Length: 155
Image (tube, rainbow, N blue to C red):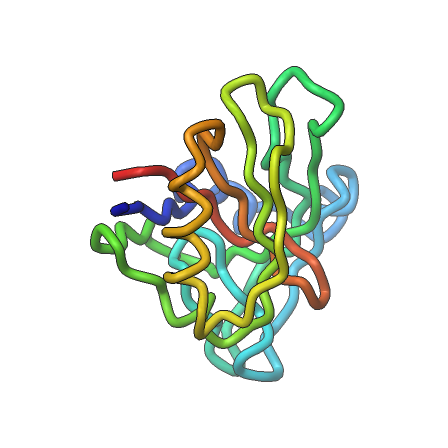
């Protein structure tokens, strides 16, 4: 079963970098400087920020479905990040370096399966989970500290 990992589009996040510290605070966001790599995984570029690079930590509603699983969490976005378009069946390195919480949802946005997977075994886990016909899409989260990472669909 082939799959596609999806990054978030850059357009919605670019204006954050023009905001003052006070303006960011009003929307519960924070400008930070990466001080470790890996450590600041960007959800737009699907890469870790370089040490010294500016990122914004912002709350993002990643599960917008009309179900009890509707959810948001903090994510990092790199300044001037360009949206990644991974090749079909490819797992970006930013995901392979981490322990991943994989959550499978049906077409009504209800969770139907979940697993914790070492990022190096993610391709196998995604493929197996998508073989279940009740699974419409997957959400990947970093298991430690738990931030939303990416959406996965069948390709």
